[in-house]
Length: 262
Image (cartoon, rainbow, N blue to C red; front, side, top):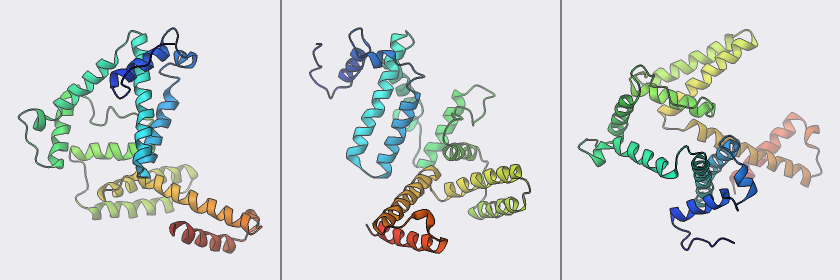
């Protein structure tokens, strides 16, 4: 059996652990993995980090960040095994990028507010892009739709494409609601619904609300209330799908009080 690293708190020790898993005498599962086969695991770990943040659970966040780090280092080790790049290249690349985009910290640039930082950030990113590249390029199209809508609208705002005030956003919301009501076919309604969602994301952005997080919170709230309703039915020997609408509504209100009171 190979000896363990002396100090498991060191990053190099963790890299060595992953290298051993992929080595000749390592783990059969780890040795079989590819960038493609790990995609679902990487995505899953990202969502688990988000859940720990949403629950404000530092211990869980520490654990989930470790799981996410495992995915990053494992991808880097696969790349190293394939002769593509090393983990040191990953670290050097991101370090260089961050230093370049923070001249107010590492250079002679000036930025007294977060808004100035973001403005300068966009100017620096523009320098890095090829001449005719769009400001919207670089975002993965398979991002969750709400998060993608937020990011592309935020990037458009950086170059001045923005409503003058919140009233303009609200007027647009009213317009989109009217259009979805007037839409005829299912296809038209689907298009108008997409426009409405996109405008709602912009409304949330104006209010400083992260749409993706807000919807996750709403989903979690619904899950807790609905499962509590099911539990109440079991306690009372009721068959859920045999209840009338009014009975279900009363049960929902009871679940809201019970769940939110905990």
